[in-house]
Length: 475
Image (cartoon, rainbow, N blue to C red; front, side, top):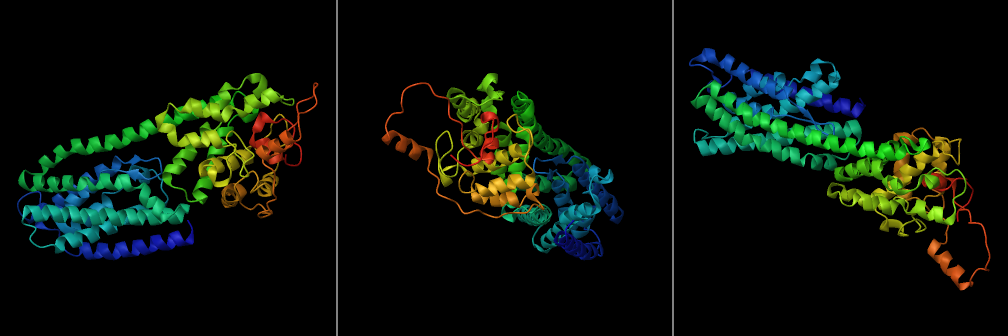
């Protein structure tokens, strides 16, 4: 836990403590009584605490690491019936999760989680208490929904602040990523108001009928996570099947995925783009399914035709994935992850910003991973320091310098000496070189050997098995 995160947690905990003292210093409202008479207030508070606790126990872990549950519905209902005191006890005790009891959450995480709900709940309860004419059902409904809106908003702001200081993600990106969950939680506000009305008019047993729609909501979250995990596992298995065709590249796609996502976080890309990097990193070499083993596993120099077959894998990969509409954002990554920043790459000879940003990220991740792993054409891997030097050396030629800058800020380059950006030299594009050759006239007839590709070691490994002997210099 860093100091800034610790300071924020301490501040929120102190504020929550003051609010808790102010809330419990006054009795709960009589509306929460479970039986006639003052003796029913405490059992009523306990009833809503237990319901809130049941909602917390059914939390669903979302892909981004956050959890979603239906805790807010009984908590808002308790706030509506019993005021700040009921909201305080529901927020303090009812938000306990099983993973906390198992010791899976550090103590400061428990404090942050509870205070992140407790403080917004009490503040919202005080605001709700101050609204007049709540005896009118329409006003009470609007006031309850408004209080829930304040409660949800404060909770999400605090959570985003905690995560930002913990993981270094952008605040706006975090808030945008929780938009769907926010709307779903806000939809629970009318349910909470109905629960409170049924509690008063029909008794506590009638509230239990709401267990069905609340559990259905929770089940929808769970199904969403399960379907996404199943899809991701399928993609991973497919990527692993491609990698295992060559023992040297086993696990390559998984490592490229991890590096690319860290670069994406360093560049503060949107959550949708992070997901595209997650799946695009796994699938970037899927087109190698169509490359014959004789070419893919060859340890000698590739002929001109073999080179063409190998260089076709980005296009083939895009064609394979194109029918899967869910993977549409990954198509540019798969097709363009071998484009060079100066336009000398393939398949479309894109230049600079014409290359999709996510493809430029994958290109850097792909090159670094390959440089630091053994290959048939280079059994001794480069060190991480040497690989970083290659990325810097060919920034502006092969790689986007801004992406390399972001890579340096990730854990993969941590504590490595950074040579900094190199001066970008003008390098003739392949198309320009072809024009010069055409103007020079036809080549003399007769057999000749296929030329070797004079590429840097960074490009040798960026294209992995496509070139089998590293040579200095750039074509």
